[in-house]
Length: 305
Image (tube, rainbow, N blue to C red; front, side, top):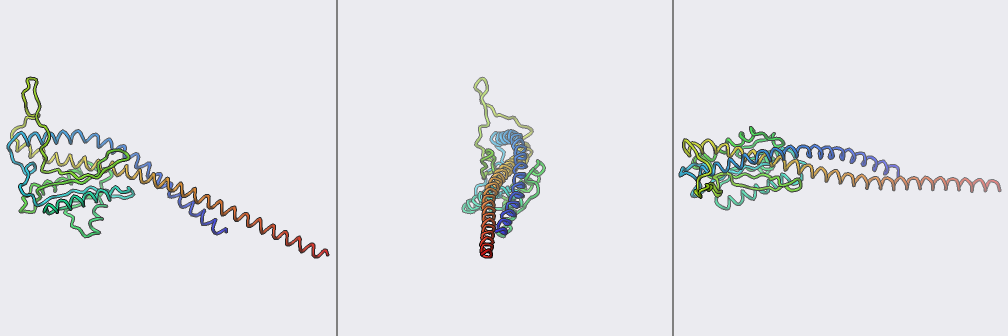
């Protein structure tokens, strides 16, 4: 019985140490997600306004630009998948990868050849394990992405879109990332970045009822598009990187809280089992003492006779 009690105590010590680690990771993730939320909120107005400006230029002119013009028969698409460098985040990475695979399957059913670009070691490991081709990958910055990281990712994607299809370029650019909705809800989404969907109102009415464009541009629409569209892609990718980072920290916090709670419950269960084993051990010792005393008393009484 003493050996069993030692086993319980050893397991309690082990689970207690694990609980301390998960609790610390929960607190770290909680502090990081707040910072990431602020960065998401700060980047969104710029990305939204830049998108409106680009759409205004594209719809307010007859200029045909490779980043705004729909291909008649698109046959190639580039997909950027955003995952994390680390795990311990519940279903965060698996949901993003699943959304990416569903998008790829849909594009392939439409007869398009898909090139996959990946951010994050988890996504890279998933594709490498299954021996799937990766056009280009980036790792090492998913927890705290910067605008410089977004520019580094955007450069080859813009080049792919600008390259003619006959030379290996793509007609469309999609991004798969995890949208931060709230601390409890993060949703994997797939969006088309390029060509732009020109479905936003880009005109406004003056006081006289006259309709005018929201933006004036010079020297030419083509020059403005050349200057704005790289910024548009970079800002959208940067916002997606920030949302994925915030979602990952929130998922880690939730996963670590669940692990901490489970460890606490396991410690309580093991403590009850250890107490029961200790009580059984004490009962056995008392029984042995009583039995020994009774045997000694019987032996003494026999010798007196």
